[in-house]
Image (cartoon, rainbow over all chains, first blue to last red; front, side):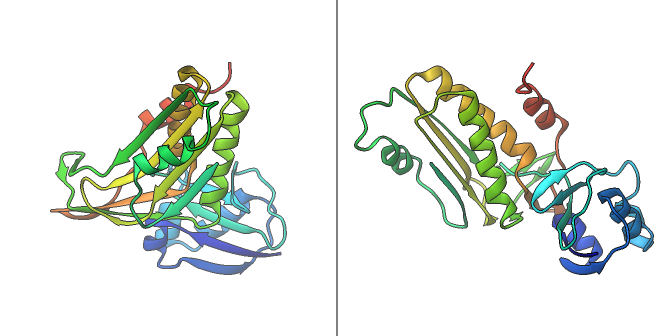
Length: 83
Length: 151
């Protein structure tokens, strides 16, 4: 499936990318995170188990077991700090 | 109901006036304004920049206002959150809630702020003498939001 993946705040800066389109063979948010971790370097570091980050699918925060629909807009970002 | 994400400043008095203008059923308006401080975690802060997730931000704010309206009988709600570069003393966020009585207005105003702090996709980056740094989420904000989980 095809996914549009967005990164925000510290993760956008560390990855050096705000947005990318991915061809993805997995099924869930956890599968996507694993595929990104496999890139190594800052990806492995920032998305390591125990690091705090959130995943949103089509603009709703989801659990890592959430299924990713084809053409989903997925966002990965640090815990929010507004207000 | 008003939900705005904007770079411009806002005026609390004008927002409260607009809320009550022409109405005689409102008995209470509770409001909260969050301001940028000049100090955080032991460092001076010369300025901060707020980033957000356009699209999701408005949706998340609308969802938390809907949740407040499901819990309390509210007559009107305004939420305004600024983005971009802000200086110490600048207003960041406004929440105003109108109800028939103070109880629901106070409670809903605090609920909306507590949920906004943990649910709405905004991030702050501070300019300090040691350089720029992203603000880390606080466990105390999660604890504040958790108080509202229905038992």
